[in-house]
Length: 196
Image: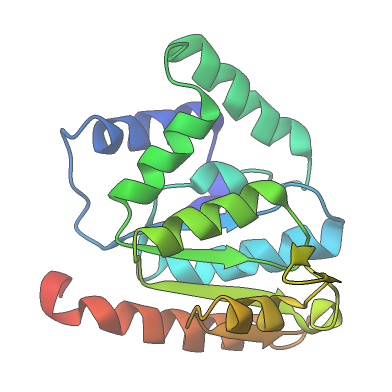
């Protein structure tokens, strides 16, 4: 299903959800990831999304649109979105998607201000959340905080500092599907009585 996505098909699929005229049968997931990154990072994010798609309706499919790892596909989606809905900017649209979503997941391997903001908004709304990160980024500083002094915590340390109890599932190129399956199984268990 994810393999046949186009910018137009995604807009046609998500617009009824955004305007409140359609409710998917599966729990709605906002999946975030940095658009930048190399071929390997994009392939791993796509594998995470394919596992998520088995259990959830992914409302943010545009971030995994680049089937051939070409960022132009994502930019094509944004261009077509602006043409059809010039009154709804990208930030408004993504916040609306997160509000509608039942839960939130992100691949936090690559640093991204956008994904960081989406993550913070989902946490603020108390959405059940899960994060994934490639093992190679485990000890990479994620952002600077001022807490009496400048520090550069890892993502794990940042979540502890902020008392955010969101699990991080670390994966590598060999076990990404298995880690995704375990993580999304746990996340979907929050919705067993509601949707299934």
